[in-house]
Amino acid sequence: MLTNADIAELTALRRDLHRFPDVSREEGPTAARIVAALAVLAPDQVMTGLGGHGVAAAFQGAAPGPTVLFRAELDGLPIEELSVAPHRSTLPGKGHLCGHDGHMTMLMALGRLLSRQRPARGRVVLMFQPAEEDGSGAAAVTADPAFAAIRPDWAFAIHNLPGVPFGQVRLAPGVVNCASQGLKITLTGKTAHASQPETGTSPAAALSRLIPALTALGQGGALIPGYRLVTVTHARLGAPAFGIAPGEAELWVTLRTLEDGAMAALRAEAVMLAETAAAADGLSLTLTTHDDFAASVNHPEAAACVAAALDALHIPHSTEDLPMRASEDFGRFGAAPTRSAMLFLGAGEMAALHNPDYDFPDDLTPIGARIFARIARDILR
Image (tube, rainbow, N blue to C red):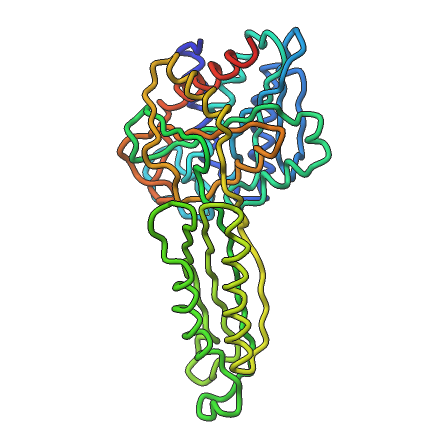
């Protein structure tokens, strides 16, 4: 059980992490803070540099048994924090505005409990994962050859969720987060003087056709099999000048599907539209993929383990609000034979995730730690 002193120290840690956010693939300083905080807990093994800046700490039980992994994210967001809190971000243009600082603190709280009483059997791994926000981190960690030494039988994660009553949980088997993929389309022609646009090759018309055509490929609707959504997130045409007819354009779109299997078809249709538009206007075309998230799918047995733990702790839970449109890369930890599940812990009425005034509610930390500890106890008893 966490003491009042534990909670005070964990709150201080969370706020320290909040002051110094690192964005995806730049989490070295945050990883160093985590390693320093883990040292006093004396885990049986600490691994660093997993998939970039990932850190894992293992607590070994006395008897053989399965490996149970609990995951938190190291990275913040490239968003300016708007806050008057004394622990607000000290780094311009960066903020922990998704609660990853709080998720890390939940794992550190679990680590305190494990340092006092190891599991009866098997082992518990605390996984501090890099680069969740751009979708690359879980894939990099699980592909790292060093990860084989701690590859889990079970994997679990918590994400806080504003708008859900405080302390309540959303949980369901099956898909809980959509697959998504960023597609960057670059159309290149030739600039010209604005008085003689006919002497160049402008991508303006192709860009104007592509925007409605791409969004028509997926217009959302109910989150059922076949769900597709295409969102234009950024467009740029030429240079910001009155004397130059444009010779280049960029269009960024996010492709979203409920299931991984539907993503390839949606991408193929989007690519065909871009190729057709470029060819029709004599433009060259470059396509690049970014922020590639697989769907996050809760294994039914893992979801049942979470539900049993919540019932034992008398924490209310429901399938309401699931699946959700947003993407999460935790699902990559659930590749066979690992059984994985993510639950969503209500943060109450407050600023939404990724809002510039969001701040993780510290009172969630002991709740998350109790949930993790109960799951570990039930599996490893």
